[in-house]
View 1 (cartoon, one colour):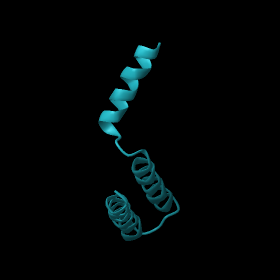
View 2 (tube, one colour):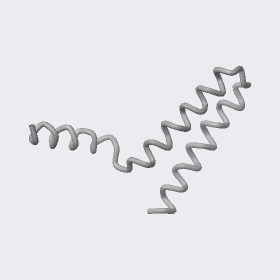
View 3 (cartoon, rainbow, N blue to C red):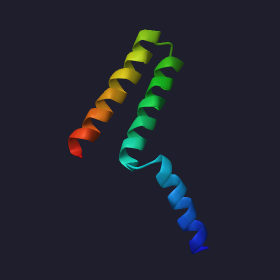
Length: 64
């Protein structure tokens, strides 16, 4: 069982290096989906994605 866990952790590590950054991006995408769901203009939804992702990336770089 520990071998399976180690393999799964390594596979996840290939795609997710920084867990908090990944969760932040998922949150930004969910926020954009929610704004589109309530009928916000496409510019607001797109702006949420662009500004949010650039902000999250900038924060991640500054912290590292």
